[in-house]
Image 1: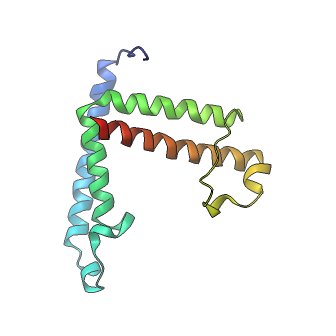
Image 2: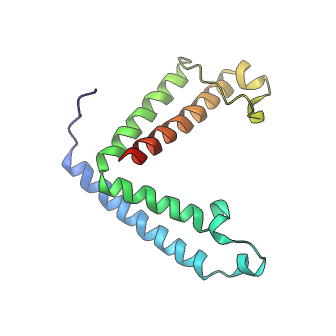
Length: 139
């Protein structure tokens, strides 16, 4: 088990203020989406409409609530991701996409150092999000 890194109180206050501002933005966006009846007129369910609908905003609100409950969790996950990006930039990672994922079949993803780094960052980001979600589910 890793030792907990002390959190700077002023940094937590700034982060909390930023997250409060972001929450107001999300609430405003939610109001805009909720008041829009375009999806209803087209016969689509806004709750399942991905980035343009309520599902995305609901997920974003849950993420913000988690960070507001435990600001240190954001710092911890961000630190892990930053280390992962550095490892990707130094070509130290060897993450592979899921076997059925056709998005990365082009050999350029492995032969070009830039594309390989982008692939590793993406896969690492995906893994970091998954670990964060699993940690949150256990609490």
